[in-house]
Length: 463
Image (cartoon, rainbow, N blue to C red; front, side, top):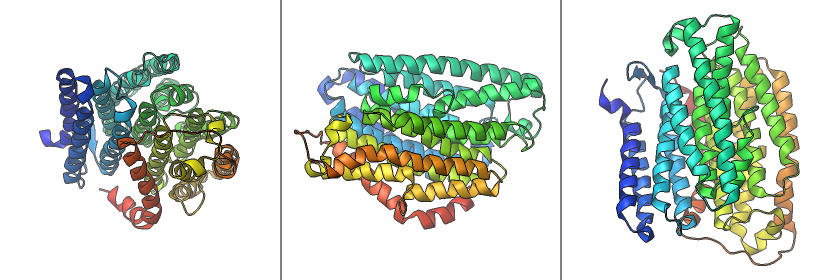
């Protein structure tokens, strides 16, 4: 195995170690340098991924796939993590463990990259566990915040159960099929109750990473209680990786088996539960958390038709890209407003701070899928792929949920735009403000550049 095949992942690993060592020797007031080193390492990882963009093969003894989906993950995961890094320096400026935060962020990024490229169930387990263990630390990073500790504990408890089920499921599948290698499992997984139970348990572990029903309860707590930069990361980056990993797994099974139908039912339940629970939330961060659950439901539409429709994978990756940018933009606006999240505090926001108000509006409307924003184009691609597979009922459920979601987004947008301001609200500034405007521009760019990217994406994903 050429060591260069894993150069992007090794770069992230070595950068994480370097950041940890640097944080140990620098005084606390200089820990901002750790953010710079982390961003540089992630950028280098993306540059190395570019050199392998045309690769379509298995490596690392057949356990890691170099293909179009892995290439997308190698750009999307480090790229969006750089933006999460940009949100952190001012937020953690007084935290004694400021520098170590970036090391945890990089280790979690490495787990996500390993998960996205997994071509073997054991490799998948390794990626999920690395992403999860570091995620627990990130969620509870503010040890003096009771709500942060509660978020971390709930994330840990749900994750411990889901990951245990994942490992048990791998054992079942290996026992029935005699292998954990995706090449051996493709179309050859026995159609018996034990194998189906094993696959279902593996899916349960990935549903946890995606924040899908029934392993979704951690998402709103983490969105509300974790430090805002960590919440932005945890509600986006693991989802990107889990979406690819779940697609690869479901694509191994024939359409005649029950697994695609199970994913379709989970998709319908996830988008419905997420939207219904978001309706009367009074905290914007918690509302975004429930919203992210509903967005997972839409993404699962493409997973449910994995392998049945050629455009399913491009639709999934395009939608997850837009979702990631919009979700980070929403959290960037919250960080810029120093973490103020009560809906009542957002009254008249556009008059006091028009930038964050417009950004939140664009992010929320992109979640809904209002044309011509890229969120509409991403959802449209999902709907078309699902219809082509004959799951019209799932599209009807998704459209109904899309209409329903408009209500709770307008509960934030309406007062922010049309009400009079009440009191003052300070902003954070610094790198958080620069990151906020970068995300703002990126969301707009995805709208204007959608056509050429969408035309090229299916071709890029083929061998």
